[in-house]
Image 1 (cartoon, one colour):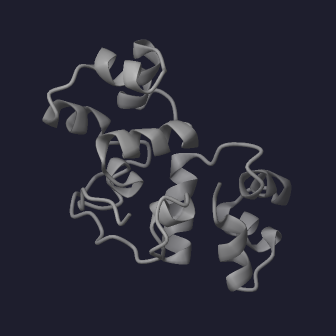
Image 2 (cartoon, rainbow, N blue to C red):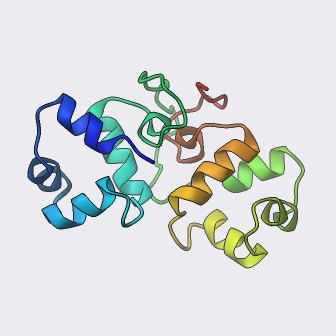
Amino acid sequence: MNRLKELRKEKNLLQKDIAEFLKMSQNGYSQYENEITDIPTVVLKKLSNYYNVSIDYILCLTDKKDKYYPSNIVNITNNMNRLSEIRNDLDLKQIEVSEKLPISRPTYSTYETCYCDIPIKILKDLATFYNVSVDYILYATDERKPHR
């Protein structure tokens, strides 16, 4: 579940308007809004900034609209994430995390190394498992604790 439609309607915008902002087709954006296709993390970040809400709010992980304080870390590319750092802080091995999330270790490894984008469901599961916000995982904030 996501709040993209609700956020768009609050601003009296059409799907076409958001699609233009994202430089994509209206049909492509509609698929994100209707949860037909996963929203890439880079798009989640753009939409979070556009609507001035947290990624956690967009993904219905919190009912608080407030954004987290922005990250002070510079030179972060759009595909980077903190999964390796969080896992190492908790002294866990990739296999231990993958077994808790029912995904394979090689698949989890591809998420840590940013070899592929993390599906929304897995991203939400990781945030819950690690007790951090999706915003923290994606370097949108340095605040670890989620707004739950």
